[in-house]
Length: 273
Image (cartoon, rainbow, N blue to C red; front, top):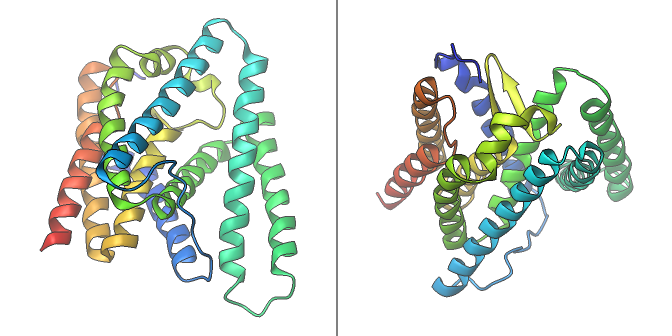
């Protein structure tokens, strides 16, 4: 992070773009014939939702710890293999889902085959751009991937689990940034994790932050409608700007707590009115 970083409204532009792309993906699924499947391993009662939230925190924590361990050992080839496999899988799966959702509204023959071929092509282009070039499109890819992945999670996880997952991750983010692997990665090696972050002006943000912002706003659209969704977006951006202001003084600051707290609180209050 640049020591001369000064928070400005323009720094919110890429986050807004990612959120809007996530909403586009959400609308594609909502207006298509695709049946979404619940991906959480436990039931949606209180105990099950708490277990689902804990499960996600463990996954995120283990993943971040593994990446930091590999960065510390300078295992760059293994890091590239892991991030490359993860990105390839995510891009291919998400491309197929959203392309199929887009094409299904038209009388196009062999939609599955067309979606499959285009998904493979998109995946190849994305992998080449991220891992073989220094193009600025890498940041654009991260923005789109964060929005699309968040939309997928929003459609695939029930409401109580979604709320608890976001709350648990916001708390974990504070620990991980100041005492855990996330802060160490941000200070020493975030730029080495190709495709897992984006840079804009003089700051960097991780793909995970974008994903969970999009998950929040997209879920509000799905479950509570456009007004709650709009409120969540405004609140997320407000929380992000406060985080940027803290970043001016601290040099590093967790990206989830303020946006998630403001976004969840404001949108849920709006939904009850």
